[in-house]
Length: 153
Image 1 (spheres, rainbow, N blue to C red):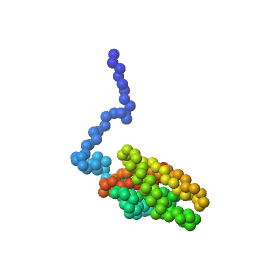
Image 2: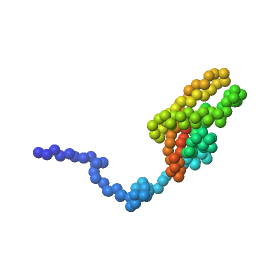
Image 3: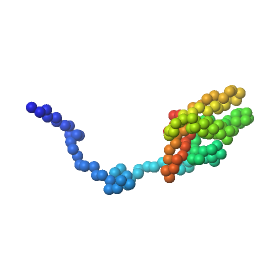
Image 4: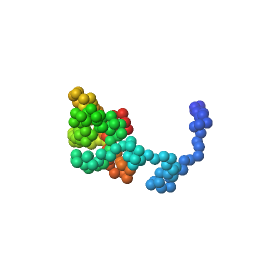
């Protein structure tokens, strides 16, 4: 005697899901976009800071941004550190230089972790700080890099 399996009602076959009429139009399958937060929005509201000008000087060809958290925590020195010769431009140059080196010594990937030395308090030696760089698409779809703290995404 064959075993008969009785399926609960939520496993009952339902109506077929319509397939998109065009593979180029995802709204046919998913519906209209409910909310979109673009890279341009992130620049406008201060979540990202464009550092592409100095990055080009450091040899990068793609647009580069840093997160506001990285900027406020490590790149923007306090007045005490400014008095010791620290500057935003110098700290950013260090980040970009270490990132460029890290890119050259690692296999191609979309995400890299790297350590940069920062003077965190006046009179103390520099301490290593772990950072993350992620390569992804910008709003039009071209490549760009975002440098952030390791717990950001």
